[in-house]
Image 1 (cartoon, rainbow, N blue to C red):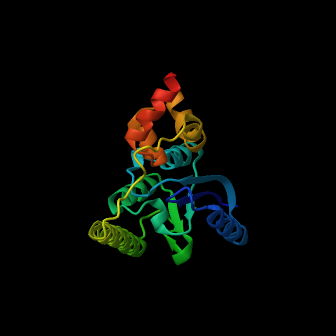
Image 2: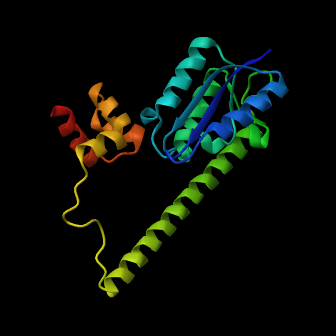
Length: 212
């Protein structure tokens, strides 16, 4: 029975990767593959691989445990940054580890361990499409926000929180429990920001809470 690992990812805390895991577990069971580990995270795929703990852990795991196949639902789960995603595929290829993309039935390596040229072409195209969609959504959101701000200004509507608003320390501790835990471990502001998506300015405020 082939041993495989699963990779799942969502971009925000509001999303849930459980659906991906369930679908991939069912597929592996039907294919007769033994799942030996699952890597799942809630982190932006736009981040660099060095800032994504689940990717670095995945690469280290497959190298150390001689895994021959990584299974994901969509190639965009590697990341919507084409270059970073292709780096992951290249590293896996170099270690003779095939990436299986369930939604398209693609294997990046042939049964004899060579690079599958057709899969390479298709995955590159799919990654470019995913990146283009991401940029388009970002542009639409920016445009919509700018139009909304302009409309509010025309109508004399003030935006933002009241000047007197100040979040309590208890609220910070509850909302940013994960960030506080990472900061207490001595992880840098930049890395905590990359892992959690929280701004560096907010993390500086959290540091002051830790110091109190």
